[in-house]
Amino acid sequence: MRSTYLKLIAMFLVTLLMPVMGCSSRGSSNPEVIVAASDGKVFSLKNGIWATYGYSGASPFGSGRIFSMTRDSRGNVIAAGSQGMILQLTRSGWEPLGYGGTTSPFGTKDIFALVADGKGNVYATGEIGLAYKFDGTKWSELGNAGSVNFDMGRIVALALSPDGALISVGTNGRVFRHDGSGWIRHGYVDLSPFERSPVHAIIFDTNGTLFAAGGRGKIFKFDGNSWSAVGNTDQFESNSVYALAVDSANNLYAGGMAGTIMKYDGKAWSVVGDVQTSPFEHSSITSLTVDRGGKLYAAGFDGKIFQFDECTGWNTLGYSGTSPLGGSAINSIQLIQ
Image (cartoon, rainbow, N blue to C red):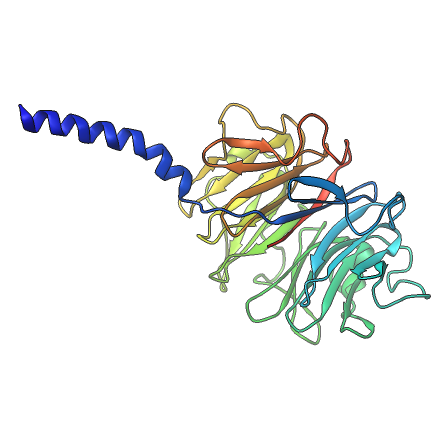
């Protein structure tokens, strides 16, 4: 009788503590969140308050689109977008990066992707296959990416490999690696695994595996030797995947059209949050990132910003009702932590 009673108490305690233990397993983090939008706005969330970031009044980008942000080796935020604009936030405010008083190296062509290494170099790519490197002093062209390799297509995403090589992808489905002297196909001979479908996002996990995602719900990985599909991606229903993120446990997150956000744990894909409804409803996911505490941040084409918490699910980030960005698409999220 006594043993049965003790077992019942133990079962009750386990049932009671399991949700709490599950909620606390991700740790806690409260980074400053910076977002850039398609109408030239840059906002930050700090201490629970949204405000313009690095300026007051009109945006230094005017009404031009911001497509990408990154942080350099000193922690400075850099943003780039339409009409060749690439600005860095300094103590004096937003200023042109490496071309003050002169024309951007991109001229008036749009810049779609940025990435910075630990040596102070910043890489930028854009329309008609343009690719440039800023070494802290001057800009220089990275090979002849446009006419030779990308067939004048857009280079829309960049990532740095563990050995420091620059990987780029574009709207014509190609994946290239810059080996220090020129561009070479990365892991394939003729057609990439995406064939002619556009590639929208790339990212490395902590093991050095490269993931790439794009049109028609395709997601592939490159293990250093060959490309292979990442699980069964039927859940994207042939919708484009625009954003990828990886957490410290190497879980892969993917977001795309129709508000779909999925997680791949190395074995199978599963929906993040409520299986029935996405917080973005039917709006496309444009950006994803994960903080040090393991919390997932997602932004969309309609200006909404959400954070996923294992205890409470998806929640608007620091606001209720209308997003601080209004209805402008959020193209990039950066965390300062």
